[in-house]
Length: 195
Image 1: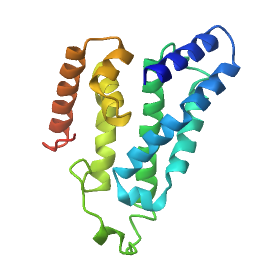
Image 2 (image 1 turned 60 degrees about the vertical axis):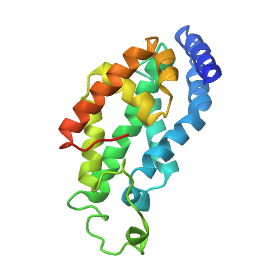
Image 3 (image 1 turned 90 degrees about the horizontal axis):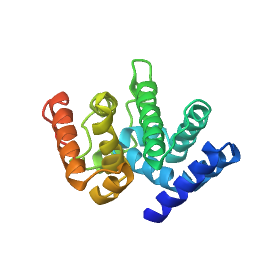
C-alpha cells in the first residue's frame, strides 16, 4: 500500500506542476485499485449486479472522475481517493434509481432466474434497494472527516493503520472517526449496523 501511495503522490506532484498527461497516468495507475473497489461495491447488492456489471460501474465512474479532474485537482492521495470513491458511490446511487425506481426494469421485472433463492444475505448487505441506496446517500451526508475514514476503511478496504498514514493522522483519531461514523450511520439507518 505504501508503494502505491508514494507512486500516486509522485504522479499527483507532476500533474500539479502542469504535466496534464500525468492525470491520465494517475487514472491508469489507480485503475486496478478502483476496479477492486467497484467489485466490492457491486458485491454488496446482488440485485444491482443482475442488471449491471462491475466494468460498467467502473467505466461510468472513471468517466465521472475524469470529467471532475478538469475542475478539481487533488493534491494528495487522500484527496484523490476521496474523489474517486465519491464518484463510484454516486454512480451506484444512480444505478439503483435507474433500475429500481418506479419505472425501472428491475422494479418491474418479476423473474430472478433463481438468483434470489440461492443467495444468503450478508450482515453488511441491506435488505432492499431502497436501504442500499439510502446507505450510500447517508455516507455522502457524513462530515468530511468521517466520510474520509468510511471511504478508506469500508469502500477502499484499507486497514486502520493504512488509513491513518494516508490521512496523516493518528491511529486513535482514525478509530474515533470510524466509531463516530458508524454511530451516525446506524442512527440514520434505523439502528442497522454495518461492518
